[in-house]
Length: 277
Image 1: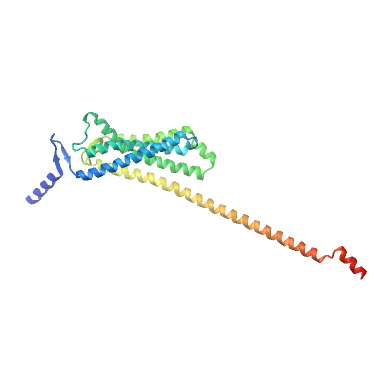
Image 2 (image 1 turned 135 degrees about the vertical axis):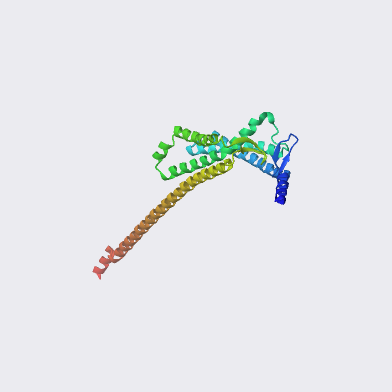
């Protein structure tokens, strides 16, 4: 038992380190690993900022791209753009040896963790909205689509996409909060409740599976509709081709019959010559 206690204390001492301010940090990653993760976050930050900014500018400048579907695409691009821009602060915390380097601006770390947490839900809901929009546009009459996706309804949908995840995260403030998380050296959600991490994990899984199910069902129905429509079109083309072939065959037969009849009936010159003989 004593050996077990000594081993446990050695393990705890190896994991927990205390800085000059007597604050306890969980040293789960070497600085090399943090550096690699920081470079990856920086790469995603640059690519995400450029790509999502391009989408936003393209839709803003081109009237042809200002469609109901692209309203959700722009909403998705804005969400990912905010997340990409805020990633730079996680790069800073990963490279900082003493945690969050701006104690007077801790709200910035809180906001980074809060938006990083909510961006997953907002992005997934935007993807679900795009898939449902495609389903209605392709499988339903145009009047039905125009009735559902009016500018007012689209505005309500986009607002709901943003409000729902934010409301859910605010309702969980009793079991979690946002800020600098020493375990991962990043600005993210934190929890002091023993069941908080489990609740967050379950919510993420349920929410993600629900949205992915919506996306899969929508595109599956679209695929079935397109395949059924393609089969119908092929059948119509085959019927039209058969009809044209039958008409061509009848025309050819009639021409051959007329030609045979013309060859059988004697001409005027032939009958006169026969009478002289």
